[in-house]
Length: 457
Image (cartoon, rainbow, N blue to C red; front, side, top):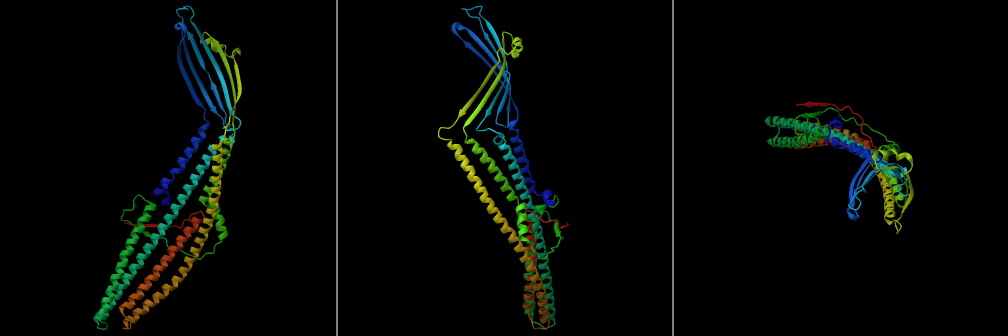
């Protein structure tokens, strides 16, 4: 919960879906109608300095259509004035031409159809879903890393407890050696050996404390609580213990679960669909360009603007234009065909990547199951080792009190007990990490473990 709310890595990753969504919305706007306007003023001097002035204005609306057509609705207005000249002093004229025109350009082969013209929007939507999958994978990875950080800190904390307990036992051994030396039962060398053991155990405590602090900082970084930054001196007490248990896995079911949940496979599926769309578009681009053009205009012409607009729909000056335009590269459109082959190869590569991903997923699932089973067996074995090491240590202490064993023998038994306890903690840590790996391999996260936090200032 803390990691989801506060982790800086997740905070950064959550921008990616928003960025991708805006890219998708931008692509969807490709069919938005466009308002255009043109204004021109021209002057021409003819023979005998005859001046002709022309003013032109045309507001228009361009409407892209998913079929590939472009519909244009415009209202051009042209005013032409011819000034009087020296040779024709009374020849000044004026004419206004008003029009309302509709034109349609519809591709028939290349760039024709909704499949081609909606392809970029569909691909952008798939890219958005890919981004969602990548973000989810990043979040899952962060949660898994945060849980690993907790269990690593738990293990470091337990290591410190073991080392400190061993230090206390070494102090007890020195006290026993001191008493026996004072009583004259043992020579002073036994006290020296015991003091050497205390120094070695204290060194172990120092190293364990340093490792605990490092693991604690890593955990603080993941949970990133406002009053628990990495440089605070606050100590976290891990209260949630390990609770390992033996498990038998249905590995085929786990693999199927992984195929359904792994975000890498979902990203690959999205990429396969993007590749299919790209191939369809590139295949269309290999066709010749054949466009149908249709134009119809209502026109009115008169010396006065009002009269020109009024006579626009009288059909006296209306015009209709229909036609076809054709275009084809002379050498067989080599560029488009090469791009199509490139897209086909890209899809083949994506399919090969999927087979590799599926193989890697199966391997990760089986490896995680093996690790869980192995760590469980290690836990069982270490329990027996600890029991035997404790028994050996107690017997060595008794033998030392009877003068049969030296302090060195007792310290060796103490170190063996310490090693057994450390090995058990390592086995617990391996078990928890294997369970996290199992969840990650199947595309999920570990369920709530009821982890509680106790903070000491």
